[in-house]
Image (cartoon, rainbow, N blue to C red; front, side, top):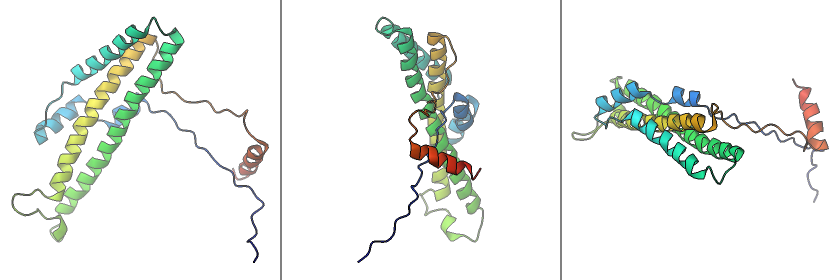
Amino acid sequence: MTKPARSSRASARVIPLRKGTTLEMVRLACPDAAQAQRISESFGLAILDSGGIRDLHERLIIETADALKDGLSERAMQIHLQRIVGAYVGSAHGAGQFYTRAVTEARDATAKLANDGRDEDLDGPVGFDSQAQRKREFAADMGVQSHALRMAAEGAVAAYERVVGETWKPFERPVDHTTDTVGRKAAKAQMSAFD
């Protein structure tokens, strides 16, 4: 019994670089205060104190930094706050993306409901909501939640600027080419032939 011949070419592993999530990305994905209020009013949800959420999170980060100032150097404080603010921004962005998908699904379900020939999209039995209505309500909940997380992230970013003295930017690890093996360098050279 013979074994199948193996390819003599080594496979190159390509590791994509991941760009950090910015506050601008959060603002594009999550509703602003006016839109969150419209959603809350239209669906009978609680109206959030957007400014209060933002201010509370700004104070929280500032007070945390104040409590740590004697134990951390300036650079250590910057790194620590960089990570904390990055977590807030990442969380808000994830919620915003989820909200965007929920709105798309709600729009699709509502558009299908307008087609009289589709039985599966008609209203449910008396006393039950249609699938389209449930999707709209879910999207509204996600909109309010993502707005709340956006406000928390904006507060954290503002606190970072006040404590560190510079605008927060997402951490992006620089590419380290010093650890490239001969195989990786060969793979890069071969792949560059396709460019």
